[in-house]
Each structure stands twice: as C-alpha cells, then as structure tokens.
Length: 245
Image (cartoon, rainbow, N blue to C red; front, side):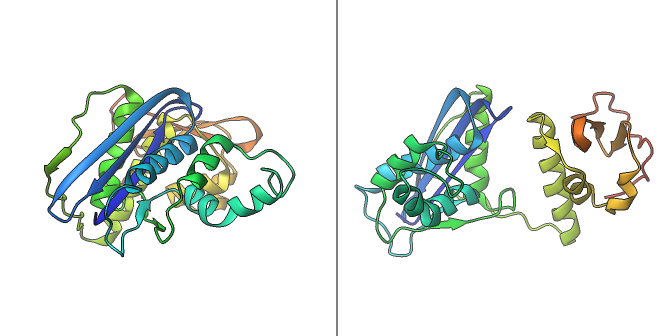
C-alpha cells in the first residue's frame, strides 16, 4: 500500500451526501470505495470516508511512509488533537456542549492505526487522488452512476500545471463559488470579499443584488450574502468590471 486518500461531499449541509476513498498499491492497482446518505453533513461524510480506509488498512501491508491524504482539517484536527480532550471531558467540547458526530469519532478512535498519520492536502489543487475522491463523493451525493476501480491498474492523472499560476488560483476560486452556490451557503462580507478579491470597503455600501462573473450575489439577513448561478448565460457583468478576478 503506497497511497490512501478520502473525501466527503454534501449538498445543502445537511442534505444528500456522499463519500469517496481510494487505496493505491505499489503495482499500480487501485481500489476505490464510495457511499451515500440521504440526509447528512459534509463533516460526517469526511469521517465516514476516513473510517472506511482505516478499517481496510488494518489488514493490509503498508509502506512505512503511508499516510491518509485528506482536505478536511476538521478530520485531521479532531483525530490528532481534539479527541483526547473530548474523551477526558466525557465527550464534551471545551465549551461544555456535546461533541457532534460522536458515533463516528468513537469508531475512528477504535480503528486508529499507530504510525499511520493523516496528511492535509488542499482541495481542488490538482492532487490527482484527492480530486478523484472528490469526484466519487460528489457522484454519490447526487445519485449519479460512477464506475469504481476494483483492483485494476490505473494510471494516476497528472497534476494540473497551469500557467500563469494566477489562472490556477482563479479556477480554484470559481470552483469554490460553484460549490457555495450549489450548497446555498451564506457568506459574511469578509468571506465574500476574499472570494471575489475586492476590498472590503468596496462592498460595504452594497445592499442589493449584483453580479460577479457567472453568479448573482444576493443579500441575506444580518449582512450575509448568497451566490446563485446565473442561468441567463449572458456573461455580461452587472455593476462589475469585465475581466475582474
């Protein structure tokens, strides 16, 4: 075993969710796994994917440098930092509230493999195994058919090498915008400014809908904003400079 990766996805959060995971062997063969739940959260899907890998890795020979690659800092921090404190406090957080997803955290703790760490990889950064797990997770969350590798030799797709680097960063932001719109998330003004890369002061005076690239930016209560994919397909900025990042 030379590589392991996992990811989770959810539409609505809570809502329909899916998870994906893979194991890559030194002969080039790959095993992929995935599953879905009708009403769940992204975090539960991340934990479920990692648990699946740990249960399978417990009986497989592993390269000494093997780690489980994930883009979930919630999974990494909970598994490596927070869980001991939770157990000491009777599965309570520092504020005294019950730990969310306790059932999965207890299962993960029981499946823990000494010497097998979790390694963070930035999502949608061109990491081929992480990207593949995301594809699996999203397919299951949407109920779309997908063929999973079951031990055949599969070449890892090369990581994207886009030039200039600014273009790769832009594509990552556009993909994030799509996921935020699909999940119907509300953004603070600071979060929105970071996404569209505009000065906070430029956005503070806005109180009505406006357009950024292919999305409508809609005001919510308490100063929050929501992205919605513009179905018009006009591609014309409304109140925005053409070509603005």
